[in-house]
Length: 530
Image (cartoon, rainbow, N blue to C red; front, top):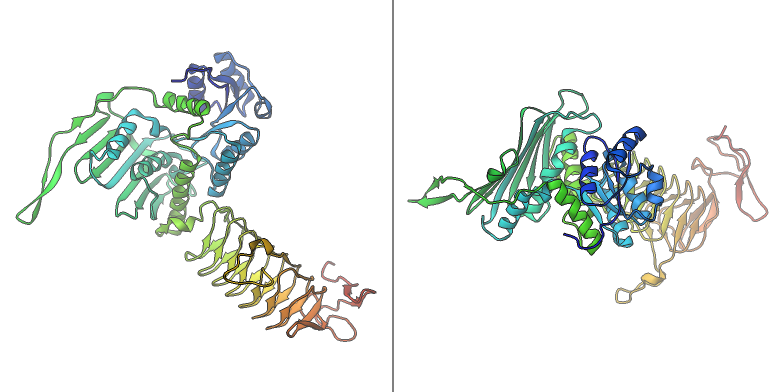
């Protein structure tokens, strides 16, 4: 328990679950304010506990409020947590930490940078029975885990803003990852929709781990009775955490084993042994842990990184259910924003990267961190982009192209097969020259032919055309047609990719161009915008 004055905390969200957080934070002497999207509910809760009701903007601007407890709808978690961290607050977020692993990764980075506590409400990690079970596993009392299964079943509360997987399973996944001490390598989830065509009411998730262990999670809100049971099967003993039982039987140990006799396995059953526990309200212990971590600076048991690991599994589970096949955890592109993109299972998108909707990334390609790929692009086989690369909308990058740090492609750029961007003028394998990288800009609509080379530090003008095999060593004007080694201008090209004759009129569109006083081509009749 803490010996100094507890930090002042505001609870944002006073509804179905939030009211329990308000109660516990108040009981621990930390409640400073209540907040809810329904002002009347916030006022009612605030009056009950003798604190002011405040709106969210006032709370995060109040320097006397050290931290926030967020129990808002899941879709708001990432935004609210980010605003609070940016305001210098410690943050407790109910599960899930976010809906997108990229947002969760960003929150973890923000918390580290600001040196603030970020904690996720995985409640059962604070249950005395689970804490004891985890300690027993850690001490080797059960032996090596072989498999784990968890059932979380009930009749209701049926939700319409999230499916049963996202509503019930985070707790079970959190416990399983905590016991295994590792993330799964492959996830298979199947679900069924009965009440709503787009919302799963029942899901079964199977997790496979690198060490050969297996686990499964069965969740449903269409079950005739309530069941919350976690079963651990190990080679020396078995254990059952059944939260529906009285305290003296919530955790049972079965010290039974399978022995071999005359080459045949024999299972010997023994009576269960209740494990002694000290009863305590898990939610109160969870809130106390948040307060203690704020005061001590220690990392929470369920910190942001733990929340991110759970979110990765949820994301992979959802993907498996939608694709109707097993999904490797690496396929979730954890920490990357890829919503609406189509990414081949052999491709990788690293944490911190963004891929726009409608973009397709094909076999064996790799998008590195801090790289942004726009909408409706196509990255062919064996393309590498990044880190720190920007690719605009509607770009087409053919097979075997590497786009290095410092390269920017504006909208509508075409990169032909095996063309090359360089990033250092005079590379040597034995000499590190990353501080000499030069930026390259390829402007809108430019086309670069197969096997061409673009030397770093150059700018390729809008709608220019680089012939196959050319080597570009200096800046290229707009609409220029370049060929040779080194590349030189051999003509002009229209926006539609047609070579212009002496009339400087596009044979395809009728658009007219002229050479200006600087000797560069400019458009004087923009028919595409009409």
